[in-house]
Image 1 (cartoon, rainbow, N blue to C red):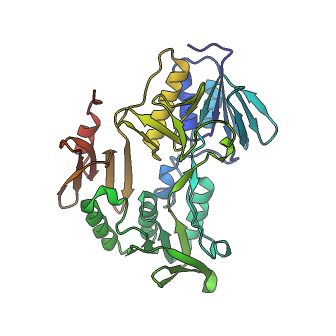
Image 2: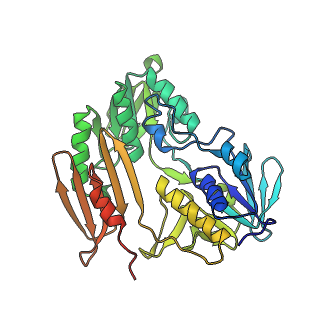
Image 3: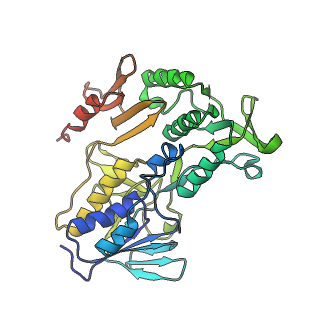
Length: 385
């Protein structure tokens, strides 16, 4: 158990970072808790940003950092960027000159939007969506837009496209893949999503990528594709994935490669843990390392990291990965993994279930649209062994 002299430092006021602080207090942790956040803006919950917030709904995006500081004795310092970690001395250094000593450290710095390194990008105004500032800018620009190009057909790209169509904006989605979302989900979902896009009046250009950007007339942007086609739009949004925020860890001695490498207990080094988008941990259920950029995973990792800091017995995270998405009037859920050897699909009038199987025919993942039952059943599976 912890002592009042213990001090846990959390780097990042993300869902994962604040979740660690909340879980520590809930477990009876008596030590100091300090959360350091490089951004000066108030932390927010990101899932609503591409959906309700973009449509004008402001409720439901605030993270309770102020209440946490007042009622649970958690010190949250905004605008305090951590620039270096010294695990050998249990120290972190910040850009403002602070040096903090910790008994345990949790890295929850999240990820940043990936930007396409194509000619002309700096000459035009290309939107990305990650935090509150991005969302407010995108919402303001969407209000006056008649046309938009979304580069990227993943979950975020489709959610933005769906919201823009509800605002009456004409939308073209561009992807270098041949299907919407991840091809690993299989042809059943690809066909379902193509129907959704067509029914919503969204143009879909697959197997091509952006060659260059150019300023267009009246403040528009011209998007030149590798096919030679040129799209002109009032608004261009890149939704082409994210990169873990790990640059500040150079020289720390931690293993960093597409995330901070952690063991099954989320530990990267003695007294150093990671949680959220930045964490690549070994999942014993699947026998391999994973990095998952989803809200539920961030909360699960926050709770387990806190448990391992406050508790006497180390726990491992062997849960089933899960995410959801709401777009074009459909509720999509996925649990498990697609890294299998068989796919079995079942489609209804407005629903879809896809099951992913291993070599033995055992179900290792389920995708479901508008039907929660297959997901609930799969998530009840016990860990193997």
